[in-house]
Length: 107
Image 1: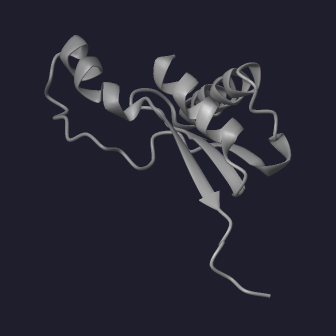
Image 2: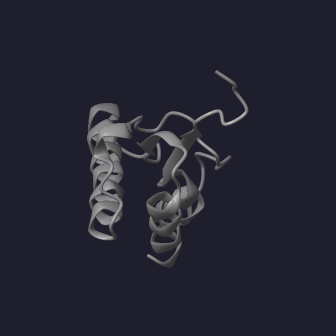
């Protein structure tokens, strides 16, 4: 929550944001359809939290879930279940992609 509160403050104070994309991910455990749904829920929870913290510019926010794509871990399939769950924890995440307007352009 501390990280999200800091992000919310940055988004709230920035005047040059063109768009913010909130992307959720899941680990590879489970059915791919379930993982997409789960990752979408993660992303929507982050969007809700940011809105509760005062970032209400939802007209520039896209929320999507990508399931277990874009894994950031390299966990072996031979690990015991609990060890695999722990190893895959970094794949269960939400990323916020912020695109700023180009202030260097002259009209």
